[in-house]
Image: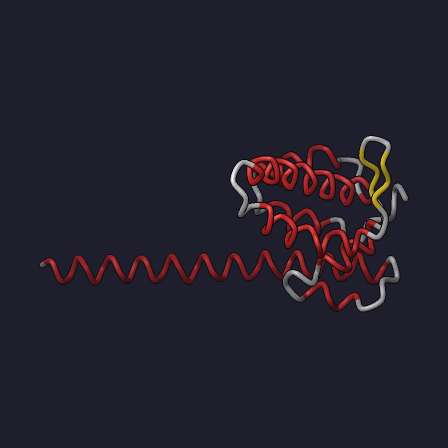
Length: 153
């Protein structure tokens, strides 16, 4: 009797794991393809990098080009987006600084997300808020804006 319960538990767990992996792969492909199409449409060299994890920040940065934060202009977003996770990982190792770094990292990526959506959608604020409350919507939103025309440079 107990053996059947254990086998049932593992069967359900395995099924849930497979479904979760399929959903994650699908969301990854939606994001990658959406980013790829945006990169192609903005004539980014090596737009195929959108399909490589972590390196996909490069075409995203090329699409954004620069970001304005409180009057400051951050140029070369492709390199900033590649360096940001590495810098954050190092700062996260330092006590107390890790809290400040986490908050700054969250705010920075909220601004990056908003900037991307703001270039291609009139609903950028709503899309950004929904993306942070329900993260699985971010790849769906990127996929939906892939064919939109550029609204703001």
